[in-house]
Image 1 (tube, rainbow, N blue to C red):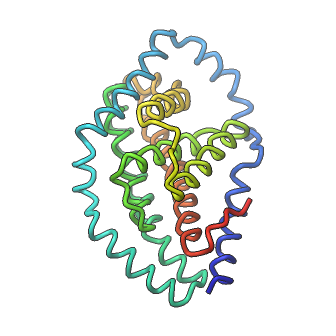
Image 2 (cartoon, one colour):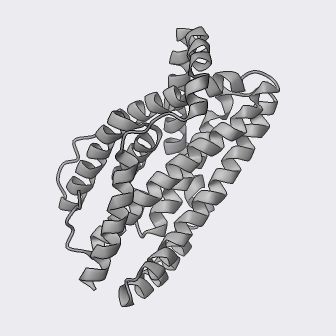
Length: 268
């Protein structure tokens, strides 16, 4: 069994390394970069600071008041029971086919939440709503991460797992050297969490860092989304961001799952 689990773990580790490679901009991104830079420069510093503050307040609101609603809509117990059933099948025969059965639950949840986020962004954007939809968007991101974690048997209610979820958002939405730095922090966090060591991170600190990453990622998009009609771009933006976060989280939670079945050695 150990041999088969490690085979699946090596495959996931190769996918992880691919994500950490240097990423070149597409031809379209390269061609539109001057226009995007010009638009970014035109956005007032006050609005930039306001956007970051809006994300910070959005996270605080979701964690303090919205988390219970998220948990209720997910049906945590049912998700964990589904995982236990698929986990038992995988343990009996740790093949790629049975691992995909474990993964399917997380993949379906990610696809559903990505669709909802895109519809929500497009609808609010059409009416010229930008900043007010941020708590709704954050709620969808956190729901995606909760469901993904539960799909791999991770109870996501604790403060530690909230910090981990925020680290995943940062890793998903950055690239190249910055993504590698966040990935290092994720690996270190996983090691400390497993060994019961002090995490060296606070939820407050990570909310601030994640708010900065999100506001930087969505700076131009949310500025445009605040303009009537043009704001329908919000649906595409929310789709892209949620899809990135869902894909990155699925890979990380899958690796955690496999490491739990192996000797626990992290493959570099």
